[in-house]
Length: 190
Length: 91
Image 1 (tube, helix red, strand yellow):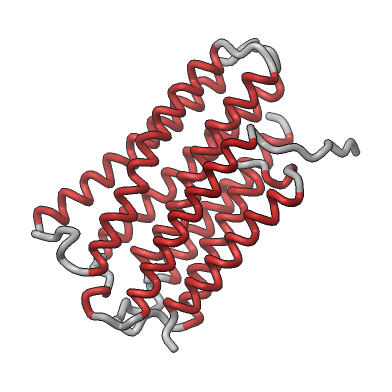
Image 2: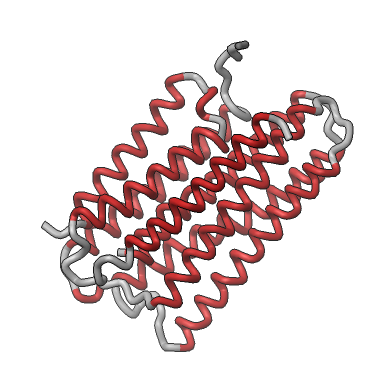
């Protein structure tokens, strides 16, 4: 079996961005855990069964979107230097559409909370809820822009250098997914 | 479909299964001010960080990366999972 040499996926710069983002979100997670673990009544999560289902649905949406991006890049690796990029292009567009579905569910969730008079000032839990999910939502919006850029770049792919920058876009989108993987149990399940 | 395509699809199915399992475990204990029992917190967060490791290793291709990059990712996963389970679970 052929053993491939180890290499940095994408470019080094994207990993710097990923680890900076993981550090920022990681501090938010620990801060939330400190407040939640303190036993303060206003840190008690206010999520009902319906909210949990929406959170779970959004997790499945982002996982599927990540899978679509991984499949697209795997196809592009098999066809270096351009060629038939229709299938990867469609997979990337599908990933972006799933990102939009995530935003739609989140906006619905926010609207429900605000309608019930719940704001970030309602208590510690909702302060963390709105700040963590809001910052993550910003990443989703940026990520959809990145996916659309990847779609354009995949269509005029000319060589390995193009593949590396497309991989960088994919790594960013997977990071958006993995951040939600932690946010969901923290804010919705415990 | 290449071997990579099959592998990615299998991992995606596992991730979906783990998500549903964590959702089911979340129903085992009511959400209280005191926080979840250690077993529930460790179960739910253990699954979450296992999923994070799978996304990093497979979808982000870290399994083929140089060891220092893998070590940084593992350090983040270990630090976050231990801290969160310790701080969140009921004493």
